[in-house]
Amino acid sequence: MTRGPATSAPLPAKWRQLAEACCAEQRVRLTPARLAAYAELIDAGHPLSAYELIALLEQRQKRKIAPLTVYRHLEFLMRVGLVHRLESMQSYLPCEHPDHAHESQYLLCSSCGQVDELESKRLEKLLHRIADQHGFLPSNAVVEVTGLCGNCAQST
Amino acid sequence: MTRGPATSAPLPAKWRQLAEACCAEQRVRLTPARLAAYAELIDAGHPLSAYELIALLEQRQKRKIAPLTVYRHLEFLMRVGLVHRLESMQSYLPCEHPDHAHESQYLLCSSCGQVDELESKRLEKLLHRIADQHGFLPSNAVVEVTGLCGNCAQST
DNA sequence: AATGAATTGATATGTTATATCATATACCTC
DNA sequence: GAGGTATATGATATAACATATCAATTCATT
Image (cartoon, rainbow over all chains, first blue to last red; front, side, top):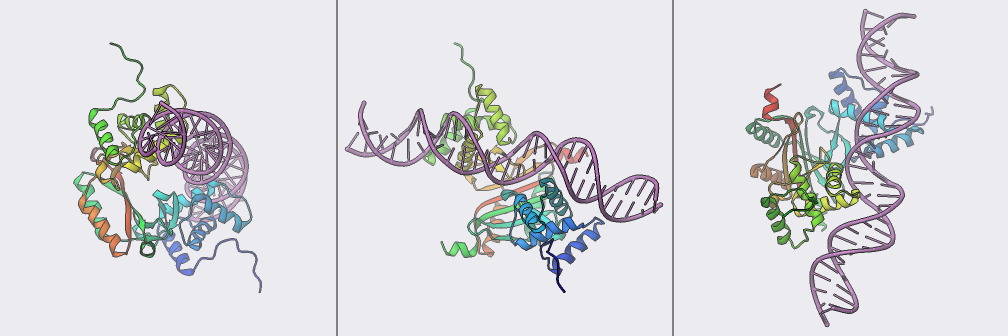
């Protein structure tokens, strides 16, 4: 049997299940449009600016999409913890560990663009301890280390 | 004797000397325009968006200033380490420890806007160690913890 | 099917940042 | 101090990123 044109980026079952579980757990709606945005981020394999994401979705769906629409989907995906925003790059990427939605730790290669998501409990604890010492109640921690990844550091 | 209208925000000697020393050491030019931008950031006492800074400078100098001009001054000030950019707020503020130009650690109160610059050697070392374990060569580290400062946390 | 809540769409606008090319100023050497 | 070079500024335009408002639709539940 033949299939119609794809209206959404291919999304490996692994990620689909993760997204569905995540949204089910939080009792929020994973609509087709939201899933399509998520699938596009997964498919891209690297961080996308909001407008790059818009362009990809438009190309995929052969229609115009208003920026606000995509920003809303991104906002939703970030809220449930499926997507992070790289503050120092104004771009978005799927979170590999949606369970720690509010701890974001990245190594960003300024040469090849590679992104490495960390998950250091130690770093997390230290940040909380430091905040605590300042009487500060943290809700969201951003750690973004820019530099050269292993490959790029060698070839320099 | 009388003075003409101020064309630059008041800049306490402490900061002026810091800026001059910093630029002298790096053999770069601290021009009046650059110093004026820096003085305005110091005088504001809180982070400014680039366009807020433009507005203040225009008001002070009674003339139009092109955004690019100010972005260039900010870029310069960041390069020498006198100013930091808060990535999660798209805003700029003077650095309290220009000697550690490339380590930026902040606690940001989402309620009152208070900004607390940290200087944790431990955090710095941990970040470097983690990067090292990943074969990563860091050039710039951003740590921005959002939450409630002591005052705001209590009054909630 | 009726209701209320959440989501999406359409349109407009606001905010942040950069590109290009021309002009001016500082610095260095002779 | 004249000339050359690098650096800094100015003028103009445009690109990139993000949000406001209000109307229309969809979904979940009764």
